Length: 569
Image (cartoon, rainbow, N blue to C red; front, side):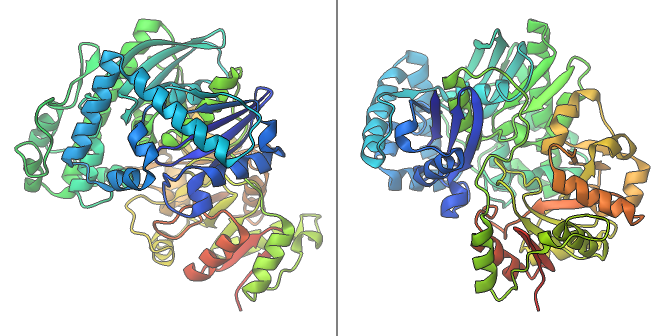
């Protein structure tokens, strides 16, 4: 059975499950080069099918990973949908949309909206490609989040929690996985006050909501939360009596209203710190509540709230939690995978890697380098004296010499983290490298870049609860660093002494592991900085041409593209 999962909300995408195994996942933003693209994912569908070696007529089942978000009206008018998404977090239209979707869910009338969406999307899909599937299935938004989290981890019995802004009239759910099935235990409507809280703080601080919440997380470490502001926030956003507090039904939020105008009295670092503390103070009791209710200490999470790596660190530290799995594409970009896995009834199994997208063909790499005037030398066919592949040896030598190396080779990552196939790497021994990279990549960030280490070295560099271990290959949680790590890699340590590591093995990321081994063989600490290979506000590079263009515009030192490690000049 071939199951195609699609999602057409913001960060739309497609995924393929073949005979119970996830074989491809691609997000539309990588194809059309629009960050968090909400376009219908034709390009992602075609790319996922191509990766899987399939044709549209091979697809036997199609599942959409969100029911009535967007609504039928917005799906029928894509331009209106994109315009509505562009409205501010304080827009009365957003308030009305949340109330509308929440009311539909509460009254059961959402089924009418789901049917309308199904009919519209069925016509669109039939007109666009000759799919073998004859019927379109719609999966609830939070169900798709939960399916993505449950079926990409190995435990049959698992507590699955979701929290996001709002999807299909819902903000948060609790499911219990067992016997390969997910049972819904609880859900809370889109009126939960936690719904838009962090994004509104993001906007109030001058950042772009739905995109720059990570900047607020990084900024939060620079000041303690003012007690008065913390109390002000937590009177509004909390988890009490088994649910999150609710937002006002009647009054839309406004940036200058009595609640939000208070933020003007504080420095933005203080506002960020209070927002982060409030988020943790609300979500941690939620997790604890459901672990205690179910007696299940194996926890998997998904939804946009769990993009917050400091929150995930705090969850993993809870004594009640034995194991924490954060779906690597925890936001709406992961819905297509949840739809495909859940629709196929795939058994829970550990995700081997996030390398689920297209590869770069050697011929495409050759042509892109030639067009850019970079000699496409086949370094891979020129092994070093010790037998190390020539391209790997050349890349390691450049890194050891302090150069900045961009990588675009192997299958593209699924999710927001670059994990070594579409990455920019550098040594972390000099804190000044952060500023240099930010300038070259046209970024302005408060978090240092993430470190990559060998899994066998993790206990030397980090102190972390055992529960966080499933997160470490995917860079989805922070951990505390050791003095040895802070001395060896100051550029990879945040001001609060934490880091967001990627721990690699020869099986999960062979090239990265080998590069680290090459550094160690040269007497250097086997640690690298890893940041995504893209210019500011652009998606991570996809094709060879994307890589060559970004490499040139960022004026990086070297590009490992296919078998070639090219340097300018």
